[in-house]
Amino acid sequence: MKNSLMHLPKAELHLHIEGTLEPELILELAARNGITLPFPSLEALREQYEFSDLQSFLNLYYANMAVLITEADFADMTRAYLRRAKECGVRHAEIMFDPQAHLARGIALETVVDGIHSALSSSEAEFGISTGLIAAFLRDETEDSALAVLEELLAIDAPIIGIGLDSAEVGNPPSKFIRLFQRARDAGLRLVAHAGEEGPASYVVDALDLLGVERIDHGIRSVEDPALVARLVAEQIPLTVCPLSNVRLRAVDTLAEHPLPHMLAAGMNVSVNSDDPAYFGGYAGTNFEQLEDVFGWGAAAALTLAGNSVRSSFASQERKNELL
Ligand code: ADE
Ligand code: ZN
Image (cartoon, rainbow, N blue to C red; front, side):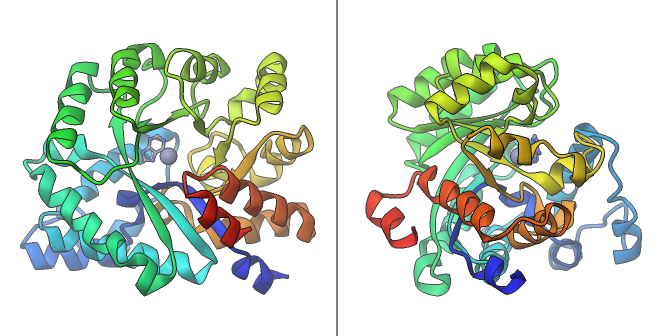
């Protein structure tokens, strides 16, 4: 069973490329770039990976980005992710990156985009993984900052397929970003947003109604609103659920208490994703394996989840047909 889970063709739709920076690579890049880290050994760094909530994780996630300086750093990080994704059956990956977090450190947008893109452009040939790149905007920054960065991305003709919204959710509702999403829609970009991870179900409603997103990242708190659940089922709006992330960030107490089985049973369009796999204990395959261990699902549930991921992707219909 485990082996077949790993080989099941799947799409990864919720993945922050900066969240794939493994501790070993952090130390390697720090040495390469002459950067002194606050946690200079693997052991000291690994001790930081205990999180109490989203913010406690974000603090480490942003701090560790300090090692990403050159185009080659971004390319190496991306290639390392694709290599691991291939091992667990990922055949299509839509990858988010956080441009504002790098600009704030003085890294040029072209360095970030060209580095990631150089790995993505050879991904199909090298790893058999088709890809799409999504620029995610930090919701704890201003909308004007996001708009300026989106304009810069458009001006350099960055190879992005869409935009997303991430970072600290509570207190930063979708209503802050109406103009940003309107601008992205006008530019022909696909739209996704994190909602209902730590924030309330009403943020999911607002992401749909005010921002017009096509997919919700996380969305687990939707289950608190029966009318929203009925709508998500009726409209088959994809929710990119990240079970191990939710446990590690204490959005749920244990995997056994995760709402995913309830969401599946209700007929919601859910997929399984890894979010920030270097921080949360595993890649897509490990998420599938641990769900199987805890819920004892047979092949049917895994097939549904993997099928949902492919159908909910922004891949061409031709590519979807190859993977279904
Ligand atoms: N940025 C990286 N991972 C995130 C998550 N799980 N939620 C919000 N922002 C993020
Ligand atoms: Zn995320």
